[in-house]
Image 1 (tube, rainbow, N blue to C red):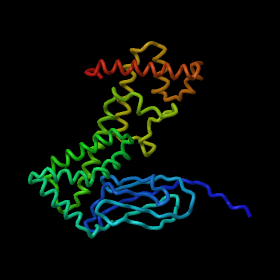
Image 2: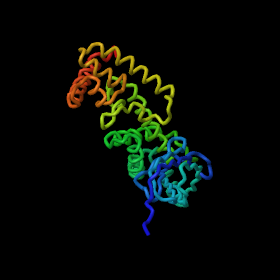
Image 3: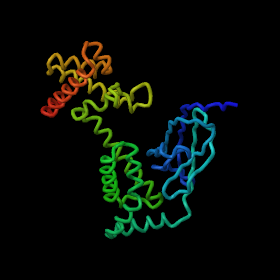
Image 4: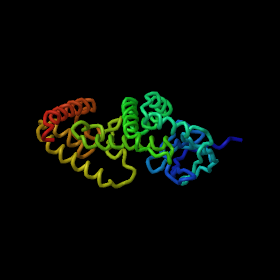
Length: 288
């Protein structure tokens, strides 16, 4: 008898992870299904996580881990959308006590204590940030910056909370600040927010809903106004390409068909047009 083939389907798993005792959100907890360890996500500053997965089976195991806490492992039925609020209990170990002792030693001027704290959490901070920025070099820089900010504000740390949670919160906030600043630096990122790998429009890649939030809406409007002003300085050939690609958001194929040009020519001329645009913007930083 022929076996029925399983069909892949998309499911969504989201929720919050909190400390059982304090009910404080746990930042940087790693969340994944047992069958898809590589498709993990980290909880944000509010302890929230969201997984979007392609699955075949009907059942799996949801796993959540976080430094200083007992791991959470629970069987789940893979419905289309799952929502959880999960409380993690701290491990009954001396790790938290050791962290507090290292913080106290660092505040007393022991440089080795700083090194030990960094050695304990560097890898987990790096991989958490890498998930956010998807760039190893940026993740390395943001990891160093996060420890720098944490160590310079070590006197503000309260022993009432886990050192790891406090550190993860600093790392995530630092990363978010950089992402927001990068979005505002329009003259350095004319192309990246608008273009996918295969030449398809990807302007709303990071927007989870159909509507823009106020910050995204403002940035998009400013980018369009800026581009309209700058492209007037290009010759007609390049101006038309830029308008079709970035203002009307047509694909390379659609532009080629509209202008009656070979696809390769469209890509080459658009590449040249983008270089010209970037040069104009860089040479007029005060104005733009």
